[in-house]
Length: 259
Image (cartoon, rainbow, N blue to C red; front, side, top):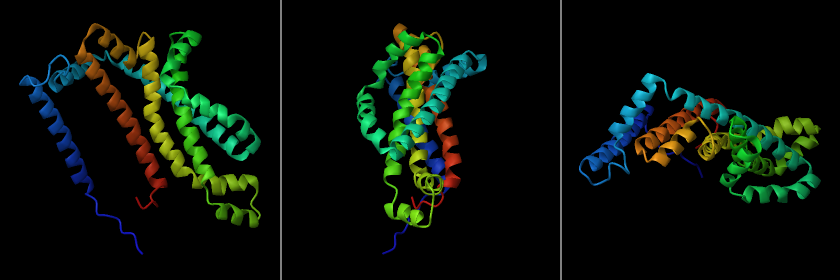
């Protein structure tokens, strides 16, 4: 029985449909506000949001906030990935440690990460350190569980065949486990981008003096919804750009997949 891949749209057609869908949503949103169907206060029209974004970019006033959030998310992301991969490899290969500590990891993962933000600020202060740790914690568990599951799901016949051929523990890791879990790792890396920014923004929202989360939090407090929507749009643009870059880097390594 053969599996045929369904026909897909060409790249130009895909981009055209994406742009058309986005324009349709924006035009519908704008018209709904202009006709009074939606409240202009609650749903700031796209024209006002775009005008504010253009003003921010022209003046450069938002650059500090964007850089702060990006730096916190990037450093937290790197720490979360490094710790998550290390823990996954350690627990997967050291069974006694896995049995001893894994229940604790599961218990910690059950804690809503948002409630940790005030504690990190209390321990580390209002500067970047608390936001970096918050971002790292958000990413850590995503990476850990994906890589751990990938290692545990490696085909046992493949492992046994490598052992029969005399593969050492190091060779098993580099030639069998890591290639077999690469897709799991890349999936967690792309998911982790959003979580890193969520962690940084949550930390800024709770307590900070700069950053996109701080900007959105202050705007929410004073009821300026145009800044809230513009700030959220900035977050989406930054996260979307980073995700697109990761997707481009991932493509050569996963070209063999059927879907």
